[in-house]
Amino acid sequence: MRLGTRLSSRLRSGVFSSPLYHGSVFAQVRCFARVSTINGIIPSPPGGFVTTDIKIDMNPSFGGTYARGVFATREISFGREIMNVPAFAMYISEHKEESLREQVMIITKDVFSKLVYGTPQEKEYIKTRVMTLMSGGVSYFTREKDVFDFAEEVRPPGKEGTICNGASYLLSGEFSSYDLQKLPLIIDFNRFEVEYRGRRGMCLFTEASYFNHSCEPNVEISVNYNSVKSNFFLSARAVRPIREGEELYIHYMPGNNLPISRFALAMKRRWGFECTCVKCKSRSVGAVTVLFLVLLFPITVFIRRLLIGRSEEKHRNL
Image: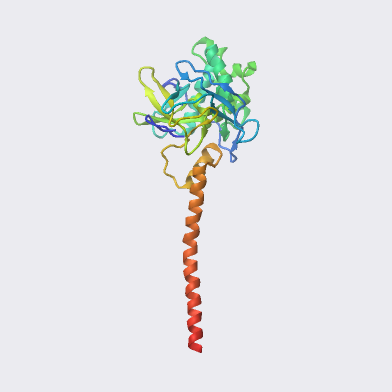
């Protein structure tokens, strides 16, 4: 999902200066977890706003116990703002060579540090909201030791860090090593790519991650940087009237001009599914029809010439 400062589709700049973790390698298999069973009204985050006229509910069209979506609890008029929320975590790359993997691990460290020595509100938000988001991708860690080595780097400055650190927090049982392995996968899966003064980065907007995708969405999102609050904010507005009980959709790749085959591949690689909306199905049927006609026409011409040639040869023999 790539969203620029205008519209492209999640650490405050310079929070961490410690070296990045490079101890893990990519696996060959991609796996995608099911979405969470969390439902009901979406609480407004600190410094943000989410209307009470939407809720998270099960989507029977997807099937399964875990198929959730965002639905309108009453009619929503065209142009109405549904939510305006700050990034819970953000990071802007310092240089162009910084990889996506490095950025994800920096945000992972920021979120995990809030669990280790953050406020009770931040800890509750991470456990009940961030950790219930869908995850997918490849593991960022290969061994249990890699997880604890990464956690060991998360500690407050001074003597307090010898007692209150990430490794001791894992051993306390409040947050397991499995949860820490899952955290970068959640961030990677739900990240919103942003740009700031020519530099690329990513933000985590937990509340916006509950929307499902459609190529003909009824909600449009925009991400802008608020210089006063030194944070990115995501705004979601209805682009047409929405009926009560109707699901709210956003476009995961707005503004793309990819051919249907490449678009489907990009969606599959990024989010683990292929879009099956009416627009995509019609584009697929059209592409197949054009391909069929392109292949059928020369074959028809060849057969016609062959038949005419045989007919002329028969007449000459007579």
